Length: 457
Image 1 (tube, rainbow, N blue to C red):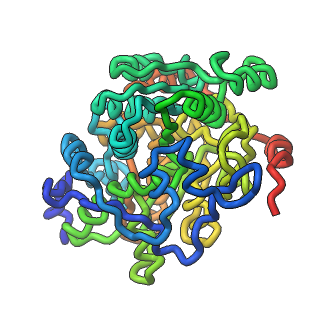
Image 2: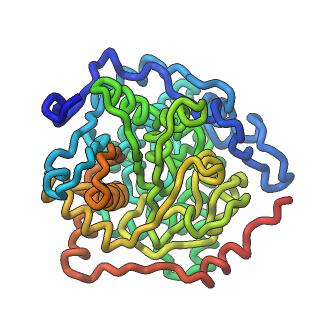
C-alpha cells in the first residue's frame, strides 16, 4: 500500500475490538518458571495464592496452556469508552528525520488515566467485584497504575488503597490528586503504616522508595484486611494477558493496511506494556509463521535485562511475596530517583525473561537525559507530550530510523506510546533547567544486591 493511501491514524471499528485476550505462554515451548513458595521452594498452588489475589486472576496467572481467554462483556463495554486506540503513522517524524523508514506508534494515552494501565485495572477490579470483595490494595510508581486502578474501583464501587513510591508521591502531586478524586487513599511508601514499611525505613533511613517497597506494604495490608485482595499493575502473567489487547489491535490495524512490522519497540519496567504490545507478534514467531526484531528498552539506572541476573528472586523488597524466576537486580536494589517512575522495578516479568533468555527479544538501556531529549523532539514534531516511560521507546525508535538513513533500508518500525506526560512536568522542568542527571549503578552496587539473592537450587 502506498504512503498516500495510509491515513495518519488507523482505527479499528468497535466491532473489530478483541473479544479474547491472547495468552502467549500457551505457544511457548519453554514455559516461564513457576512462582515458588519462599518457605517450601515448591511451586505456588492456587490455594496458596488465593489469600493474596482474586480467584479468577489466580486461574489466569497459572494458566499456561489456554491460548485465548474470553474478555467478559462488562469489561469489553468499559473498553469501548476508549478502545480501540489508534495506531498512528508518524509522518511528521519521518519527514523531520529524513528517514526511509516507516514509523508507527500505538497510542494508549487517550483515557483519563493517561496510559495503557486501565486495560488491566478494569479487568482486575471486575473480578474483585464479582468475587464480592470490599476493596483492593496496590502499589504505584509514576502513578499511572494507581490512577487507572482508582478509576476502575470507582466504576465498580470498590475501596482502593494505593501505596505510591515516595519520590513519585512528592514529584507528581497531580497524579496523586487524580487518584483521590476517584476515591482512592494514597500513602507514600515506605510508610509507618505497615510493619514492613517501618523495617525498610529503619534499614534505609531517608530512602526515596521503590516499587519493591510499595508492593510489600500493599501485600501486607491486603492479607491483614478482611475482604481485600492485592492487585498488581505489571510483571504478573495475568497483567500481560490483559494488556494483550494492545498488540492484538496493533496487529489487526497493520493487517488492515497491508503492513508488516520489521522492528517492534517497547519500554520495559516490569513488562506490562511491552508484553502486551509484542505478545501476538511473538506468538507468530513461536509458531514459525513470521520473524520480527523486538527491542525492550529500559533505563540505564535500573537495567534489569541488560545487567541483571536470570534467577529466582523475591518480587518485593520486604520479601513477603512469592519467588519469581526473572532477570533481576536483587529485591533490595533501590534505584536512583529517576523520573521514569514506572520503570523503577528491580526485576522483569517471568514471561518476558524467558523470551529474552531464549533469544526471541533483545534489550538495550538508555540514559535519562537522552530519553528526555527524544521526548522533547517527539513532542515538537508529532504534537504529543509523551510520558517519560514511553520516551525510552521513542529514543530507540528514532535511533533505528536514523540507521535506515545510513543503510537506505525501508524498514517498518512500530513502538508503543504508553501514555501522556502531562503529569510529569516536574521531570521536564529538571531537564530544561539542566539539573537532570544520568545516574548509572556501578558493577559493585549491582553485585552487592545480587549477592543477597535467595538460594534456590
